Image 1 (cartoon, rainbow over the protein chains, first blue to last red):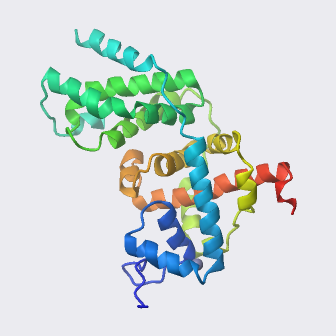
Image 2 (spheres, rainbow over the protein chains, first blue to last red):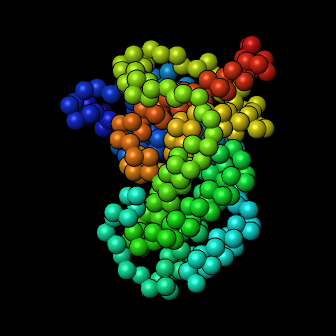
Image 3 (cartoon, chains in turn cyan, blue):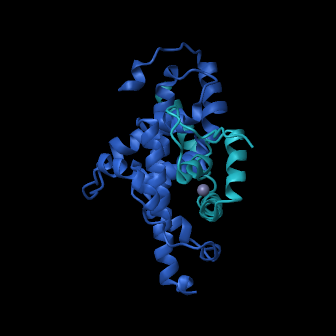
Length: 87
Length: 196
Ligand SMILES: [Zn+2]
């Protein structure tokens, strides 16, 4: 184990659990950060629990809020409008 | 309008229609969903998407072929929504985000309420609960959730789409996630899920 925390900020201040978790959730974590956080969760119960809940929610948002397809006539309507305007 | 201020490209009609068909149109489903989440009305969403594509075509020479079309389109849609649609609706006075965001940036944050939501109750939400909860958030908050979680945009792209600094994107996302969990936790309570 080394002491370098890949989440450390430019001023070397220590990131909080919540800051680390957010970087992961927001999809901004590097590979090092992801690995560090995985190891961190082994000994930090609050992170472990929040991670599970937050990831489950994120996945639910992805499956429940994607909205499906745009109405089938929309593309044609747009194309017609463009043709009208450019002729 | 700032779209006009960018350095212009020069495209033939053939190239224009290639860009339009191959780089712009493939994002129409994402655009329509974004439009629908913002307006909460299918017809308004259609109009908004149509306006966005017409604008994108009109300003196509401000777009550099092969760059991030999706972010560019989302930015136009979001601006059209603010300029043309939001005005029409009578929204209540907005909270002062500056204040909210500074507050949530403070160290207090870790000791703030972690919404009382359990993973077990999330798993019971198999209907429209999640979608309704997202829709019920204030526009600025639902927007960052859509951009990040549904569309996979990075902080930097979101900052450009929304014209806000990256730090604000981050704190707004944090706040938005908590608000969403609060909504769902209220919902869970009303359904008696959390009584264990
Ligand atoms: Zn932790």
